[in-house]
Structures are given as C-alpha cells and as structure tokens.
Image (cartoon, rainbow, N blue to C red):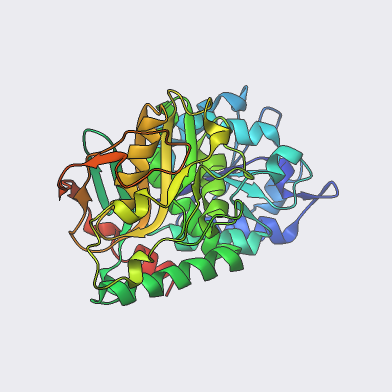
Length: 379
C-alpha cells in the first residue's frame, strides 16, 4: 500500500482549487492509496466541497517540516515511511518529506527555486497518477544486496528477463535505459522513485558525508555528459539531506577509451587491467573525497568489475566507504575484487602501479519480488 501526502498549496491554480489536480488525487485514493492533505493551518473552506464523496482526508498538524506527520501517518496506516510519497510545492513540503524519510516528488508547477531543483517531478495530476500506478507494485527491495570488506553492491533488478545472452541483453538494456532517461516523463520518474525507495529502506539518510558519482562509459570523458548523471542527480536530491557533488564535475575521468565490456566477448571480463589503466579520479575531488561515503551508480553489471575498480580508486583517494548501485544485474555471476592502487589515483595509473588479488564470488541475498519491475518500466 502507498500513501500520498501534499499541502493545500499544491492544489491551487492562481489561488483557485485546480479541478484537474484534485480529481487526480481522488482517482489515486479510489485506486487504493491513502491520500491526505496536510497544513499547519485550518482546513481550507473549499476542501469539503472539492473532496466530497472521496476518502481524501485533511490533516492539521504543527510544524509539519519536522516530518512527524509522515511518521504518524505511517504508524496509523501500518506502513513504512518509504511507502509514503510527498508531492512538494513549497520548501516546507520538501523538509517534511526528507525529515520524515518519505519519497519526494516535486510539483512541476511550483515557482520555488528549491523545488524546481529536485530531480523527481511531475508536471500534472495525470502524470502523478501514472507515476503512482507504475510504483505501487514495487516492494522496494533490491534484487541483489551484498556487503564485502572493501565495498558493498546493490542491484535494482535482474536482467535475465530480457534474454539469456549476456552481451545482447546488456546492450538492449543500455539502449532502453538511455531512451528512458532522455525521454523523461512518468517512466523515468517511476524508475527514479524505485531506486530512491530502495535507498530509503537501506536508511541511506543515516549515512553522513555522502558523495554520489557515476561510473564512466567506455568513451573518453568530455564533461559530465553520462546518461546516468541526470538519473543520479534525481536520486541524490530525493534521498539526501545535503547536496555536495557538482553536476559539472564527474567523479571519474576516462582519459583513454576502454574496451566496451558488453561487446568484448573474447576477453576476460573479470580482468581489471583495461579499466584501471584508462580511468582516474577527477582532481577536483582531491580534497573533497576524504572520509566521504561514496555511492557509485552504473547502469548494469554482470561480473561487478566496475564496482571493484571504482572502490579501489575511491579508497586510494581517501573515501571512507563505497557502495556500488546498478540498475540491473545479470544472473549470479557477481565477483568481488580486492584491488590496491599504488600511485596517485587522481592521475592515470600504469599497468605496474596497482595490485589485484584473484576475484572471488560476491556473496549476497537476492529478492525475486524485484525481478520484473525494471522490465515493466522499460518494456
């Protein structure tokens, strides 16, 4: 079960109740989600007439920015706070969601600069309906979750449903992901919410000094142009209380084009040499990485090499912890890599400037409930 909470201001158009937005909330409520309108002030005079005959409720609360209204709603409905969506139009709504550890959606019609900067937004009540519908079947659990000595790994969904050929499947998935991110709309918002929800379940808000980054594609870095940079920005502004990483400064720089892992059929895809010798950390973060807890996002992984390489560079650069998040993972082939960078990680690393132990199986847990979710969003 999901719940949706917003404030009266989100329902107004030039001071007048928006019939279309109100009808969307009524529709969401009728479809089985709890819907509440909350404010520090008294119930608006128009509320009863507009929501007559529906189960949408008004909740008067004090200092809703604290998030207490979110926690109270979760307790009453017997659901977790990460199953509550907040439609935000004002800074108070955003604070309510983040302090209450709820999923945050920006109202695209807000004039507030802070709300406009959020990554997950809907531009109409109809789009909000679609996002809720796409999200409602998602349990929020990772398909794969594992923790090892030097880094942790998470994967949102199993890619096996796209086909049995690993190379072809990863190429198909990459194209679908690129299309989804570039086209935007309800599917991208729902995908972003799914990943956000999983991170909230992991209580990511308890992790201090977060820094987010994207593992680079095989092409030479020419700026912060990775498709996943936009997606990662959406996650960061949704589940983090702070913003640190700069959009214009990628965490990793690919100084030399590497072999494309998804199309290199003959090579050893667990050999880190090609990856290590073609990337380095962005010098911009030389003093900004120390003691940071870093989340590295990749589109999909089979053997988990990107996470092992990323962790090696980040630990050499002073990071406290590293978690790799992949939107998709293929089968049970994930490996754990113990790599040590023995030179400056902010400059190119030579073939003799690192050590790597033989990779081993990356043990973790899988949750079959997440298996079909990504395929549903990106058919």
